Image (cartoon, rainbow, N blue to C red; front, side, top):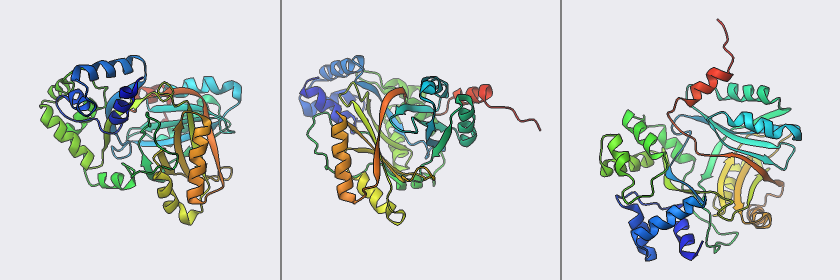
Amino acid sequence: MDDLDKQLLNRIQSDFPLVVRPYQTLGEPLGLSEDEVLARVGALKAERIIRQVSAIFDTKSLGYKSSLVAMRLPPNRIADAARIINEHPGVTHNYERNHEYNLWFTIGVPPTSDLEAIVDRMHELVRAEVTRVMYTLRLFKIGVNLDMTGQRPADATSTPEYVEEDRIRARDYELTELDKGVVRELQEDLPVEPCPFHAMAERIGTDEAGLFASALDLQRRGFLRRFAAILYHRKAGFKANGMGVWAAPPDDVVEIGQKMASFSAVSHCYQRPTYPDWPYNIFTMVHGRSVDECEEILRAISKTTGVTNHTSLYSTREYKKTRLRFYTSEYEAWEARYMPVIAG
């Protein structure tokens, strides 16, 4: 990657334009032609640096139920367990981590599914020793934005782009069939071509202007977080994936969580439940080019917030990483295969 690639990647992670010719618009401030941008984006996809360019919807706002789940397994059974868990279409991230709880995954299910029953069934299928459901009690921040130019200091701050209040706002609205059609289209990877939204708009019976208006309305109502590129972190140079977990004083969780979320290097920040063997109530995710870089960020967070009871969990193996797909029949198929039918 050269400097122009890195500048382009920084922009499309946070500000991908919803216009008829987006690649042309992306090139203008960088002095690149539309053809040059198309060539660069195509190459970055071929090199598996860009994973996907699409709308990023909020699972909970769309009515889906989701959670982070931690499992403790014998080390010799982690890979088999991960394979079984990955069969569920709602499992989007699945990592082995350097902790007693050594398998961590995220799962989302449709409104009609029973998330806890599904996790219980997974617990049985993989014969886990312990399984902890780490529901989100409060969302402080969500939104991965990797600094490709390397100019962001460890203690740099920014305003979180999507927070709990956005989810709360979405409760006031019902999704129409048109909304669901827009979700189905915009969740797909955007083609690398001059007018990539044209076919999407046609399939839902509108034009690009109508598609963009619907997308912006979904964002206004709290369903759509942003339209952006998602990168393969490791291929983009971010080899370390550090989950900082913090035991904050219960009365100060909101104030501390908001401070932690303000760090630019923090991509995810949540309040989650505690357990007798798990005292940590705030989770922060950071991505760095090395473990040392992640630890520098976590030390800056500790210094700013005063929270010293914390630990760092790093992924030692990635088993799955994908986007959650909405309004598909895959979920019912998994449940028909794996969930026991209770008579009567």
